[in-house]
Length: 211
Image 1: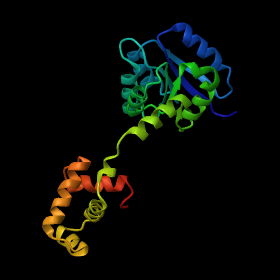
Image 2: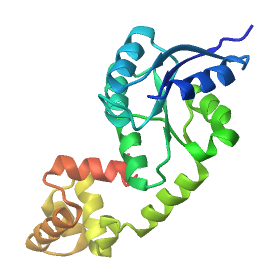
Image 3: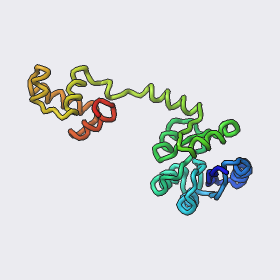
Image 4: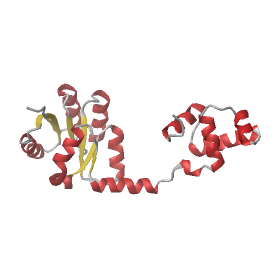
């Protein structure tokens, strides 16, 4: 017999937990091993029981779902967390994902997507309700990328700085003065919000400019 996903339910409404429990325990690959009615209890049970998955409501007493998610993610990284929420706002989604959640399911989509979301997150994949994905994508497309503010020459200089070249090398290669290289470096750091050579290298690595 295949291994069952061990699930902890966190919702401040007992009737909701009982409904979920009834549905999930009927699945051949799922088992509810605990229930919590507030955020503090959720964190305690997650650390005690070490479930594969925590199904977490955002709005709970004593400690909200975002903070409970953060504490569980920090202290029990093997516990995957699926958020349940009525909020489509990208702010809620971003905060829960930053806190460590691996999935975000809208309550209005539970009938269609609950089991699929549970299996995806429990298996280590992510899951976002389609409406939420669209909201995040729209927000991302409207957000200005600081990298786009750089001129073509500033991007050249950024690349060389990240590769470890000093100002004199860059000046020689681009046939400009060392003073101009330093001016480019200053503008690059200001536009990207960077403060040191180490941060330049990290930025370039994140963008795939260097290995």
